[in-house]
Amino acid sequence: MHPRSITGAAVAAAAMLACRSDQPADHPDAAPADAAVNMATYDASEFQLSGPAQLPAGRTRFRLVNKGQEPHHLMVVRLEEGRTYDSLLAVLKQPGMPPRWVHPIGGPNGVSPALESEAELLLTPGQYAVACMIPSTDGVPHLAKGMIAPLTVTEGGSGAPEPVADLEIALTDYAFGFSSPLTAGARTVRVTNGAQQLHEIVVARLEPGKTMEDLLAWEMGGRTGAAPGQFIGGMSPLAPGDVGDFSMRFEPGTYGFLCFIPDAGDGKPHVAHGMM
Image 1 (cartoon, rainbow, N blue to C red):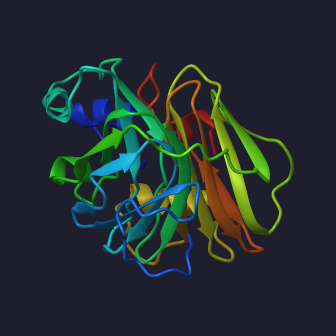
Image 2 (image 1 turned 90 degrees about the vertical axis):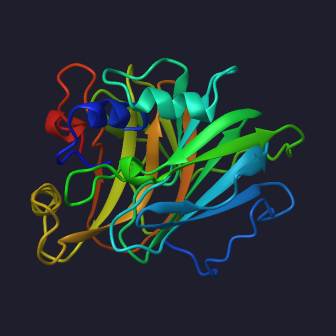
Image 3 (image 1 turned 60 degrees about the horizontal axis):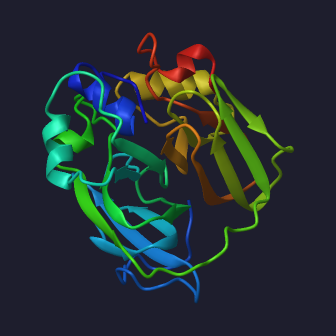
């Protein structure tokens, strides 16, 4: 999600992989949120993801609860048939770009401490992983500190329809295309990656009088001092052609939409190419 100090093997991993709820943080593992959509809640802390290791196929609402002291997100990665979680761990130790059999499909993007985010994805049977790639203030991605876990998706899931979207955002190289102006209220946002490389949506709510430049300087400067805003969710990295939905309540105020994925060409974060 954030580019500061992501270098070497971490860049490759970041390129691959890379707020709200009124309910308590207890997660019932694969208990459905309603009769049709599966619910999967993950608690994030330093440096662990706690949540279900197995889910049925079908539409699944992922809920991330940040119980830590640093920002965290949840990236869902599908492995091609025949690949395993152990083979993913092995490839993450190697330099260079990740193989094509590693396929990021989205997930609830980063939130500041004590906040939550949600995203809804369509899961097919197979082997997956969930991870957090946000770097700590020492520059080491959380994944490298153990913040990754396996996920198996089994046959027999529900046939829930996709949610009704209030807003659609098309990801391109390098812009966010809004289907209509964003207005206050509870919103379901459909995200489609129609570009040639990975993209994400990081949503930040700015403090009064603060700017996007203030937020970027704070993040890339080591998160020292009072935060000029909060990260409140969005959509974790989506591979080209993929679609996902995230839900969020937008109160009146000033927000930022950003993409921190390193560029496939020059390695610079997409915000450096104007994607914010």
